[in-house]
Image (cartoon, rainbow, N blue to C red; front, side, top):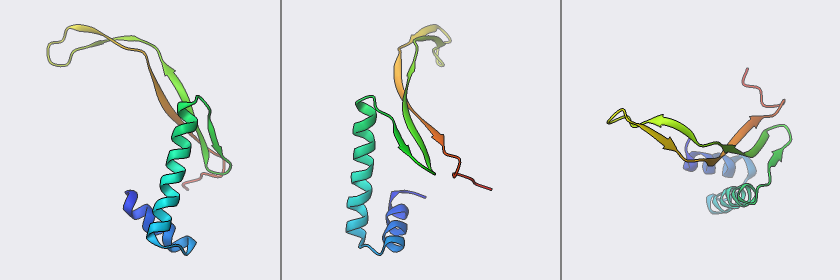
Length: 88
């Protein structure tokens, strides 16, 4: 499913126009992004939690030359599914 498919599903399930569903999805994504950039987690009960994790600097290899290189420390987003998130 891509963004257009998700917008179509939201519009149909919530009885919204595609423009309204697009605005709602964009607002959701923007809100989650702002919270994570501020270092705050986002918890959606029954769905899951988004959090920011710190990756430490580490040694790697240049795939082209095989030479060792240092990979910089970085931040990444983690998602932990909630108990109600069952795929079975």
